[in-house]
Image (cartoon, rainbow, N blue to C red; front, side):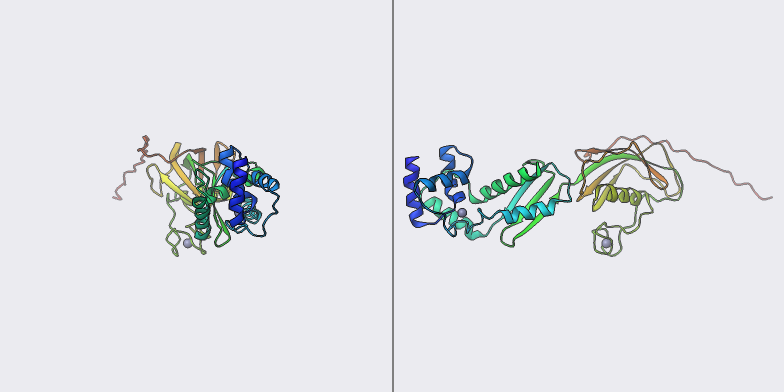
Length: 293
Ligand SMILES: [Zn+2]
Ligand SMILES: [Zn+2]
């Protein structure tokens, strides 16, 4: 600790640093986790008050609350248990971080960017009782500290099920919104479709209402004619829900929609990469046309 105090004095003679930035310079060397507490402790020992502004982060670290509030607001409507945070910082902050670290030969220290995401992630996780997941998070935040904006992107949800069609005259596929060609626009409420009179449309509508999803991209296993029925166990399909607000929904085994039913709908981890083996029995009714003579 004595060495640290000596070095701190040197650093603080040249730069004003906040508790977070000061603590970060020495935390790994002392094996401590809380940068803020360490900074506070060092400052107490050398009897120095908090600076008005931190040379390095310009008080971004002590004032992360603003961004934490943005994250809480923006994620309120989403269901999630894991998250990940990405940060966009002003290059000048990263430059100053490099300057201080190289000038005082401080090696093996977490950079300010990872420290910011770590710190705000810790606070956000505590408030929402959720966890950081680097591999497969339910939602990803991108905080732009330059523009003071925060974006949220939920992971797509993939479901698998089968459908049956009990009445004739329902096409399998829905025509895309003619304004955006299915990409999503204001006219179609970003769904990519404006009508819901096909198997695709009926399934999509159910997904929008149930999961608060923006779009439902369906992978069909085979196709059928508008005039055909789909009976028996039904035709398998996969659906990828874009921007779902809900993730944990209890689904009934048989969901009856207008003219079609969805059977055994459940969440799966990914879309199939191989061809799905699927056996179809086709039943044809053939009437021989009688001659009129
Ligand atoms: Zn700072
Ligand atoms: Zn559109």
